[in-house]
Image 1 (cartoon, rainbow, N blue to C red):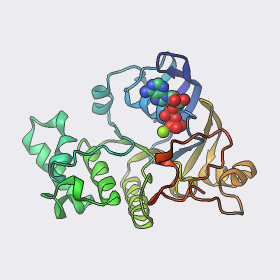
Image 2 (cartoon, rainbow, N blue to C red):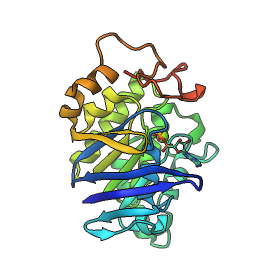
Image 3 (cartoon, rainbow, N blue to C red):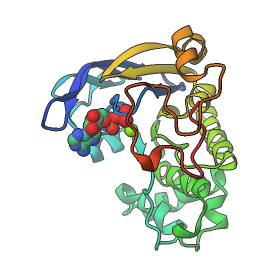
Image 4 (tube, helix red, strand yellow):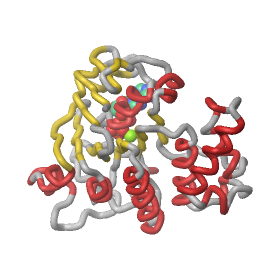
Length: 264
Ligand SMILES: Nc1ncnc2c1ncn2[C@@H]1O[C@H](COP(=O)(O)OP(=O)(O)O)[C@@H](O)[C@H]1O
Ligand SMILES: [Mg+2]
């Protein structure tokens, strides 16, 4: 369904992605893991059109989409849930969700129909419709972020670190929603710092390092890879906030403060 071939991209200075090859088959859940700064979020940005690749190809069902505008990519069925803080806290849950339907705003009937569908899939959207998004827990906010991106009924959902900052209950809820979406036919590509959780819910795994893909395979094969297992999932539990990657330099706000998920 989605195919990246030798994709090079960066932010003006040098290239962050140094020739990324990646594939997502229909109805799979692919989880990208790797140290901070590896280029994981950048991969999602080139797919969703927020960043244009300088070299290489991105194809959706065989059609090149690399460098297309974000709204065109969205219309083609790829929706991204950005990394945290993506809701408007002073707006209601329903208003936030409706913003996800911006591209179909003129078709009131379709908008209503989609909102109904989303409410059925994620009951919090109806239950907390009038509450300010800012009053929700972290896990609930993540649900609303996902709900918002479902308004366009995407075929492929891109999730950047959905577990970030969630407590165990929030984590379980998000994992369940991802699983349900996938069961309903949506293809998922997620980036996760919580490797155990990410590879636990994924069908396929991709390990990135230094702007390149180092390893791909089924999630089980990646999990069982001796090197990955010892780096991420090894016997002695890693201290909260300790990155198993020696070259990682996660900013303090992400290094396992209160409420951070376990990293290994
Ligand atoms: N907006 C930006 N402008 C300039 N450099 C950036 C920007 N975003 C990310 N980078 C750089 O690109 C590299 C990869 O970042 P990113 O894709 O966010 O990594 P990851 O998500 O794996 O932690 C990092 O070195 C980062 O500093
Ligand atoms: Mg990132």
